[in-house]
Image (cartoon, rainbow, N blue to C red):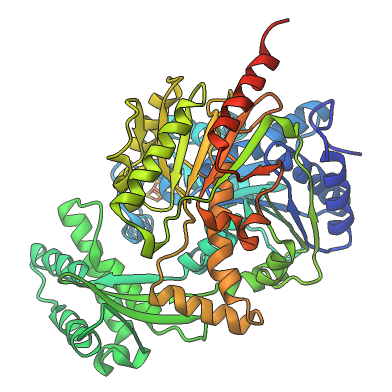
Length: 608
Ligand code: SF4
């Protein structure tokens, strides 16, 4: 039986469902690269659920962001409703998001977990005690709310005065489908406790990786860490506030001494594990324990939401890690010295992928497929590319080869030229456009020369709430410009429904800074992937960000939009090959072509 919630399948959906079924029924993983709008989540969950029910398996649906859980919830609710099923699922988010205790839930990162652990151990969290008093009998109202996602569950649990995290974990124990974040499975410091808590196993399960182009980058970040001399100074202040005589000066002194010897005429250098003084390395366990205790004391005494003490403790723990895929770097910026432990390639993903019965990797940007097979170490996996579901004529793509944002070509003149071109493009498009830059530096340098009045801007310092506010205001507008960066929250994993964007300009290629870390990653990939370091570790991640940002405009069959890739490098084969789904025009007179596109598009939507 095909468990599909809608009456009609979209183009390619039936093929995707069949391909996924064929692969996962035989225990093979599959890489699905299909453009936005195909309905990948519906297709993947439909196929996975059919196989999971037939062969008694569990499903993990994993996403890089919490906001992407909703679509999976909608699909599963739709299937249950249409087929009269009762497939249980749970929407798992980080513990802090589901902590109902108002005294604790504002505390940040590691400090929060330690505080929660202590309260539970000492029987001091009334919400945990109330949950335990239920003896596993959750009120029906809470179970029902969990079907609407974690926010609804939180509200109900708050009303009942019980810990929403514990309630959710209990629901997860008997769920067929666990919807969670990448971090739950790919962050080594979360994985074991998460799996234990929800009483599921990856082994034998079907794992769906949504927006799978993010896996390598995010998993590498979960295994990387850094401390700065300012963080140590903050930790010293925290110690003095609680009247502690624990001395951290030796750590700061050791890092400053290391910087002096390594950074005489340069800003960054590789260091070794052994460059940390022996007294620190030999006593890491003891130092870590003391810093954790003092961090907890600081939080409790001062009611602070954050402590640098625990962050330093965590850093020291990771410093001892070994392996070719890690490098240690010391760098300076002004007086600030940073010591980093960087994961170049997340080795743990290989184990995670192999444990699962089968993995389904899906995204609009998994090109070239062969590269992802290699990156995921799954050379036997099936890999399929599907076409665009919407008419080609709804989109016009242009490459402006007269522009570049290459580091050595950046100048006021170039920024003025970019701004002028953006203004011309805006003037040729009847509606909102979004412009995505490779970095905040290029965005800010260009913005001052833009002549258009109505501009909404993403700032480097913005948190998610402020960014959402900018978006909300922009959504009310019909003739404005949204400025953001590629790889940011406005250019990936976000929808602009109702043809809100009539044009997207991609300014430059968001390549990583040519830093020691970048070079180390390229070298490591060169060794691991047969000389393909530059392509896999440097060019591909940048192109993916550009293509992801460009994909924000067309989200339905009736949406029409112009996409301009503004950088001559997009004409190079490595970049050009990945721009697909429509004809690409790269002539100098493209502004007139944009006008032509819009006059044709407007005629086609005029009432007859
Ligand atoms: S037990 Fe639950 S409610 Fe209590 S502090 Fe921990 S997460 Fe929060």
